[in-house]
Picture 1: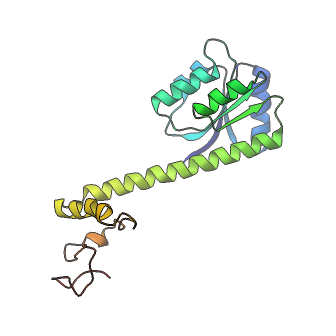
Picture 2 (picture 1 turned 45 degrees about the vertical axis):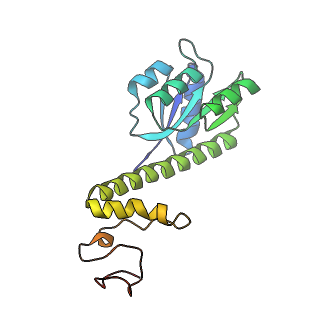
Picture 3 (picture 1 turned 180 degrees about the horizontal axis):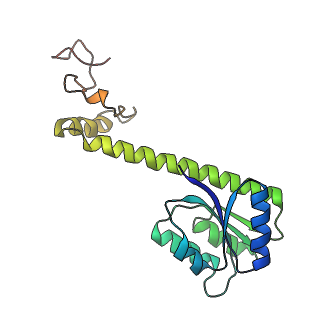
Length: 191
């Protein structure tokens, strides 16, 4: 299950405290960090959640942190918050994969809406990764012949979706070839 924590990275203690108070009052779990470096050292990428990230910070900016997150392959939606936003900065952040870009002073309603959308996106991404891992596990259990048919199907039927992979779809007594039962030699095809 993905984490619903909102991670806040801002060098301004008052902003961190204000966001922590507002987000907890809205029902979120909140973890705040005074620097990009402290976030990198403590964050566990298996947790998910979403990241509220200040753009302008000493030592490492929010954009630099976003680049490091991307290089590490962490999939956490980043919402930039800044008091010094420019169009160029917003474009750079979004091109690098930012989920949203919000200017200070923060409007509570807009921020909470953005966080909800980010967490929803994170839930869907988590479910997709879980489904992909399940399908890869099922694919690993196929015999060479079953794998051949599975790989053949999309090439032979480019406009149709692939057959579902399930334990029952690949029972040893069943023919999985996309054919009618009249032409199946064993007579065990599913139609």
